[in-house]
Structure formats: structure tokens, C-alpha cells
Length: 231
Image (cartoon, rainbow, N blue to C red; front, side):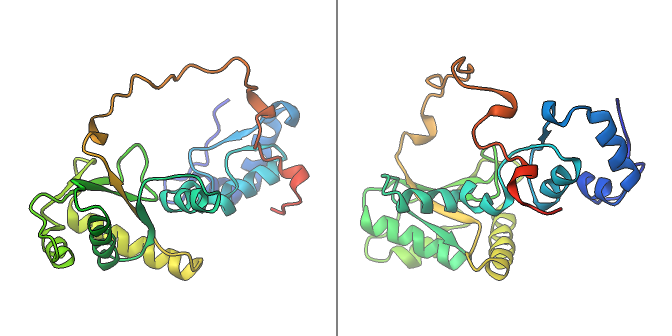
């Protein structure tokens, strides 16, 4: 069954559904047995959590309150707290100046470092990644040299990305998170070995493990009806 909100505005689909009680009821009726259904989303926000609660079905995704841990900076912070080894780097950077400082610190700690990875927390599929090259960096004057070469020595994964856009994303999202959560920004800087960008990917096995459960019984599945959350 295909249902439509009959709304071509820029609002998110979830918001459109929540604003239409009759559409919400039609979706609930079409769902059938709630025990055999779940809500699957590409991105999970508080809106999707509310929708799952109102539909009375599980939400197959991360709770929005844990979103920070799923980003680049949050993952690094979690590794640090768990004392798990991770590449040298810095997280929760809120401005281009902080990025330059982090790049300089990396080079000072490891003078032979050829390049470093820059990763936006909100990027996915590598679209928020960039690589800074230290070729020609002057020892003893790392900070000044890097500040002058950041726009020139950065290569982006996304074809349509530019330094101006990348820097704007740092400032925009860093300010938003700083105000909303006090945690800071959307970029993490980490060291990368010379061969990192050329590492073969054929060692990854994407086949499902038959021993792992699938469907509503997957570990970490959020069941709103039992979670105490309110719509």
C-alpha cells in the first residue's frame, strides 16, 4: 500500500505524517500486527522516535540522544574513554583555527607524517572526508605554514566540495552543536599513513553472518512501548 501526505513542501516526511492524524491512523491500520513490524529510517531524529511511539512499533535505529557517539568525534571520544588504541588525532574542533592547530600538533608529534585526514562528523560514505598533505612543511614553523597551505593542500573525497564550503560546514555545525549541546563541532582530525588511502577493500566481507539474529530481535533495537518514552 502506498500512502501520500499530498504535501510537496520542504518539510521532512516524518513531520508531515505527525501533522496529519488521519494519515497516521491509516499507516497504523496498514501496519497490522505491531509485533511483526518496525520503523526503519536512514536518519533517526526525535521526530522518527516520536513517530515510532505513536505507531506503537519498534524503531530500528540509534536513539537520537546517542547520535554524538555515532559521529567521528564521538567515536574517538568513546575509544579514549574505553582505553582502546586509536590513530593519533583530535576531535570536537569548532573552527578552522582549531583545525590548523590540530594539524600542526600532529606534525610536531610526528615530523615524518606525510598527511592527515579531516572528517566531518555528519559526513557519510566518505563525502565529508578530506586529506591534508604536509609536503613542503617547514620544521619549527608548522603552524604558520599549515595556516597558509590549508586551502591549497587539501584534497576532498566529494567531487563538488571546496575549501570554502568545507570551512563553512565547520563553522555552521560547530556553532550549532556548541549552542545546543556544549559538546562542540563537527570535525575530527586524525593522522593517516601514506598507504591509508590505497588500502585494499577486498578484505571486507559484506556477507551476513547466519549466526546473528535479524529483524525485530536484533540487539539494540529500540522498542518505544517498553522504553518509557513519550511521543
